[in-house]
Length: 187
Image (cartoon, one colour):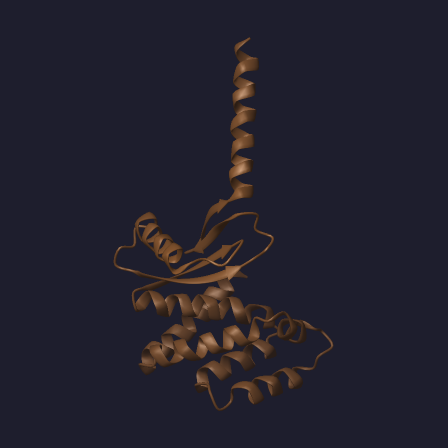
């Protein structure tokens, strides 16, 4: 499915590039992705008993006045081919590709509590160095998840940087286990 998602994202990117509408299409794709990723909308789109006509009607009512023809066509095609589950991942990949073209990369930071602007800037600086993309502007989207037990984790460019308390405890446990094995093996 990942290859299929990439093929759709490539096709959308090519059309936007040929039309010279990358910036406008980026804004529209973000609107669609953010609208469709809610759990209620996903449940509706993925429900096997919801007819395709109802899904197309949802797209028409929500987006027909706001989207370029190729983005509307993409949505209708995904319904016709029964690939509704790929809409949000494809749009996310498409958005990432356009952002890269403009020298931007998006990082999602999930933390136990809201981060201050100073903390966000610190994370942005570390990420820019860590991922070795000095020419890229790192845009940070923050989310609070109470299930994160202290700290935060970052999703960027297909990688995860985990600085949560749970991760630290797991790493400490593993180091202690390895140390114990060394002691046992030495005796």
